[in-house]
Image 1: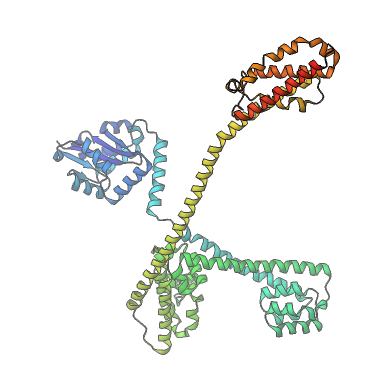
Image 2: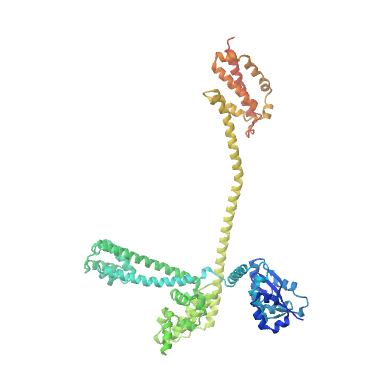
Amino acid sequence: MVLLHVLFEHAVGYALLALKEVEEISLLQPQVEESVLNLGKFHNVVRLVAFCPFSSSQVALENANAVSEGVVHEDLRLLLETYLPSKKKKVLLGVGDPKIGAAIQEELGYNCQTGGVIAEILRGVRLHFHNLVKGLTDLSACKAQLGLGHSYSRAKVKFNVNRVDNMIIQSISLLDQLDKDINTFSMRVREWYGYHFPELVKIINDNATYCRLAQVIGNRRELNEEKLEKLEELTMDGAKAKAILDASRSSMGMDISAIDLINIESFSSRVVSLSEYRQSLHTYLRSKMSQVAPSLSALIGEAVGARLIAHAGSLTNLAKYPASTVQILGAEKALFRALKTRGNTPKYGLIFHSTFIGRAAAKNKGRISRYLANKCSIASRIDCFSEVPTSVFGEKLREQVEERLSFYETGEIPRKNLDVMKEAMVEAEEAAAEITRKLEKQEKKRLKKEKKRLAALALASSENSSSTPEECEEASEKPKKKKKKQKPQEVPQENGMEDPSTSFSKPKKKKSFSKEELMSSDPEETTGSPSLPKRKKSSPKEETVNDPEEAGNRSVSKKKRKFSKEEPVSSGPEEATSSKSSSKKKKKFRKEAQEDLGGGAYHSPR
């Protein structure tokens, strides 16, 4: 008995399904078609054997590309080798695509079948797939299909932003509309300003120049020799400027009020700005055509090439058209009218605006239009499907049209198309190599700038990270210093001293001494320190009665001694001061204290 399995490719993974009652299924195809719509009946026919999900969207895209190209991916190979029976002769695998079926049969040796009942089974699997696989919902399956479809399309179609023909279509449409509007507004300015200065219309034919002159001249009675230079700048002709000046003196126009003149000038300024914008738009169109369709623009010009692309809908559509369609593109009404009335069909459409047809004789216009349409079709296909756009082919095709024109006029035989295309191929390769070199240089410059920018960012971030802990330490040290400075300043407020700067500047420095510094100081200071309180205790009452200033000094010295005793306990972060400076300051402080005590003993009334 042959076992029939079905392989189903989905956006979320591969599914391998087994079919029950193979012989009955193969005989009863109408019953299978009916059971596909019913989930309960379909479960009786199909059983899920294995499901291999894709790990990421990139893996799904790789598998989709492999299936479309008829290549067996490693994931598919692993699934089939793992879950299909080892006896390959007794296994029949149903697949939807004949390409992948042939590849599986060639590489793995399994017999594959397509069409017939397999197509109906796959239709049912596609309909009920989210019910066959546990944990898969209809919404998530639709999202996976949508995402894979977008990524697959992007991979197949190489999208280049610089070669978008939509901008050309919009630009040429706007250019045609601007031409109509500028023409209408200029006629309005001519009619309006012609009431005041009718002779100017006959002298100046250009619309934009007429509007600029209307702005400059204003009231014709105020026109004099001083404005002659400005008129020459605008008209680019001294004779015309002189004629305008003479006509203004003998004009037959009516007088005009100031408010009417202001309105005419404002409207003419709008027309001038529109004409300037039209010139900038034409420059933009030329640059876009040189990027998107350089060969077509070199052959028949930017404006005619852009009109052909806009009429076809896109450059790809124009490339798909035959030369006979390109020839009458834009003359559809005349064509169908001729077909309806059985008259002569038109010989040319939009390509009539090129210079070649105008230069040809009347009897050769149809022949040259047919030849030109042929070359336009070739140029559009080169522009559409070439990877590196270049105008070499367009220039060579233009030379061929010129030679054909001269052949019609003089009979000189033109070069063969094969020879011209060989020359064009050589030049195009050189031009493409040069363009690629330029692009590589630009890419290298861009990468260098990016590296420099990233290095600067990394350096700045490292500096910020290294400076932040130091700033935190400084910020934590500052309040400690402030607190220690405030302690000795509280003493003069308690004692009521008027000049604390002279008596308490030294104890501030004394506070920074540690225990080790006090132990390592001179032995004289250590022996003399216990004798000081004894002398002070000997005559406290007499000193206070005799001299109140000395009593204040003695109380200050007592406070100093208290601070010196408390220093080892409350030493702060200022312990890093040098031992020599501390010992000198201590000696100085000791001398002053002894002098204070000696002065008190001298003045005592014994």
